[in-house]
Length: 458
Image (cartoon, rainbow, N blue to C red; front, side):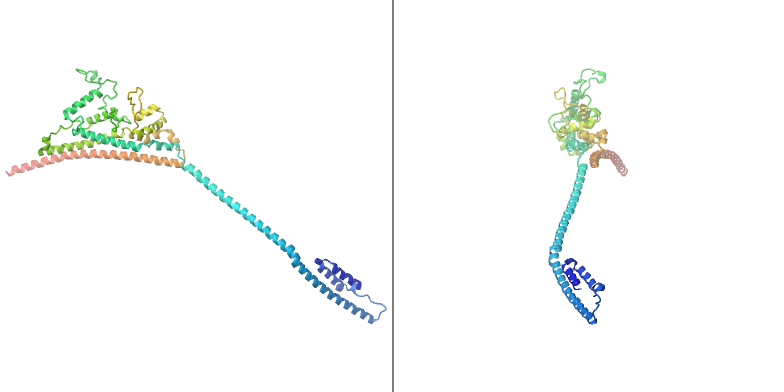
């Protein structure tokens, strides 16, 4: 019994701390559960007092062992607690938790960086997509095509040519009025007879056709020109002198006198105010009885100026465009070349004919008129197949072309409006003249009635 107890205690003491609980449980099992193994064998040859003594000894031994076991387990639990809290927790658990926290922090930071990289990449891709979209839109909407530039380059001299046309119209009207009033320096300066004589001399020198009257001059040669003259009958031929021409070589800004300037002035003299009034002497002007005749004469001149205004406007529209139009001539000619015309024919279409100026080959010395430029922009440019091919373009360029076409249409509407105003002025003058006739008729009838009343009273 004693040897068994010592072995148990020794096993408990030498057992690993981590397995102390298992050893203790095994000891209790041996002490209490295995009564057959630990119980003393019946002593043979011993009376009852002997058994009682041994029982008491065993009980004391067990109690002592129990106390020692309790003290040992208490000490072991304290050592285990101290070891767990100071050694194991500090060196193992706490260090592991610290390493794990550091690892988790590093992983979290790495994940945060990864998420940030993904977000930054997403924003950059979005910005790149936006920039590429804006770049594509800019390329789509803000890159004008060559066909769009045609409108811009062809209309560069429109304003200057229009102003030139207005100047020509004003000069033509002023010259016509000066001739009608016998202004100094005009053909009618010395009256009606002198005006006719000057015009006859101009006819013989510039416009006479020696083939007229079947080639017979009837008693003598009156023509100073030859049949090859380019101005024959342009003093009376409106189509040849003006209507069939896109541009007239007319420029009243310089001192040079061109054939076209002479032609349009002479033709205007035949069309409007063929007969001028005789010169009025100072005695007539001082005579108050002549006041009505002078006022009536000026009224006739005013009506003639209204009638002639349309003619002057047409001449102005077809007058040369000036220096600004000189630069536009090759651009307009290139549009006509797309219709199959050669460069020479395109220039002839726009200008009309070459000015020799002493050069046998000739050169185009003036730019296209305002009328010729509008003719190209409002009509010829749309007859070119390339115009419709170029409509297969970016939508923005097509819209720009539409705006340019609307602008050209507005210019045409403005010219049509001015033409209607001139027509209304002429019609108003005609109506006024008709009303004047009716007024004279009514006045004569009233005068006749008054005379009859006076005779009846007498």
